[in-house]
Image (cartoon, rainbow over the protein chains, first blue to last red):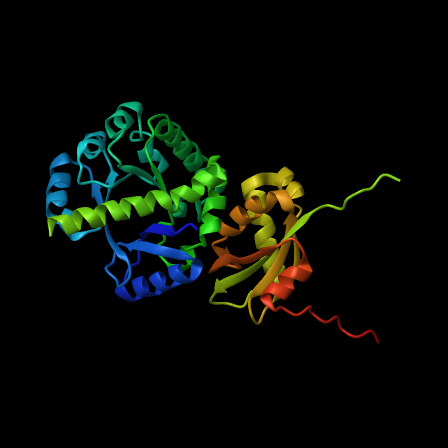
Length: 211
Length: 117
């Protein structure tokens, strides 16, 4: 039986974090990771970095405090550092299609990530609440990244990226949304279960080892 | 005579999470527009959706599609973020191949038709 995992909840308050964790459990998720600390959820930090120095400082300060460390690469410099840094679990690229034109998962980047276990993340929230024109651009960009990730065997994680309870969906809805990206149903289910579960297990083991 | 099998369907029980009390017509329009936005007219005809029933009190409803387009309907339902201008989330709770089985599994009674005068 699959254990579904949502590695990206972005509540704005601790109360909302509790509400979203409870809802995730009702929707069928076994584990979740939240950017606001809450009982029964793994902790996650999203680092938005444009320069290498600020990224290094942030990683040094936060790696041991969080179960999941994700970095949104706002420049090529940061993307290259992330590809080589073992402290990063997940890499993200900007949501904005204009920014994404200069910054995406290219073959050189993917070559550096290959075999390290770092994952590329797709947030379902990017596919919701958007105009048809923007959605078509986002789908094209994600599909381009997925083609590179697939060629280099980079694991891909599917998360909700929900900022409110209304943005949360049941696991089958997220795997159905993956059809928009031409992802096979079984692999979409893996992206929401075995792949994020392995990342969580690996990090829990690492953090316990260090303690 | 050549045996002809009817079109196979899937029936999805959904629940709407929202602050307001949307009407059945608004739900149907939102759902249809969502499919049109994602898959266009061709997709709408392939999915062939039909809102079988909707209960405003419980905010539960049943929608039908053809059996091989269930994932497309689920994706369309997942992209709904507001109904009549109010933030909303539509979540599928159960799926079945027949309406009878779906009602049995979820203990939903068949809505009674108003008595003829």
